[in-house]
Image (cartoon, rainbow, N blue to C red; front, side):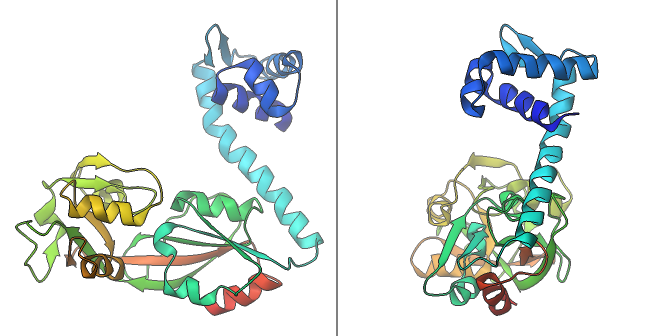
Length: 288
């Protein structure tokens, strides 16, 4: 398949409009229509309905393949350009919100750096496609186990830190005076789902091997302070790195109770495309 045609198809499906896709891609509407017709002819299948515009069952299946395929192409291009070009004088670091801690802040130079905070699942792609020189991503793991990162491209991944976990509770919660807590004991509690800023409820369920707990409230965005405030106000419990939870509790926002079981840690990993060079190499060395 021609990747240009595939990219046009993905854009039309995402925007739900041939004219909007034409504006987004810088093509004429006629050219977009020709791209879709050519792709449908190649695959011998109708991929989009026209009124309204939307993917057919075959189009839905192609979309599942298209994202990873196009990402791999972008990653390959960025990797070759990175090798052929001069080492960058500035360094751009992509980091998930809970990875922005003392280790990262101490490694950043005083000047010549851009820090982009983004959801954890977006970090590997940002590094693979050349948008960022380095990435710091975090998540739940068993001690010394690597994170399960999306397979977006051949990346170099190194663990740079592990920390215990704590549940952030409102002050009046029945477990707020406990020395520690088990996730099983809180399976039926109200939980806060903050997949972009905290530990997603899906990860907590995977850790306990159950379809519980369930989210009472979902919070989008990368504002960790907002997540802590919601938990302290009783909108749902949240699992956090112990240092983050205890800092929130020390500031009067909730009560941090260490997690006793299951045996899990908050793990942070450094992601790069090959061996970093220039300013990125210095930052990577400090993070190691």
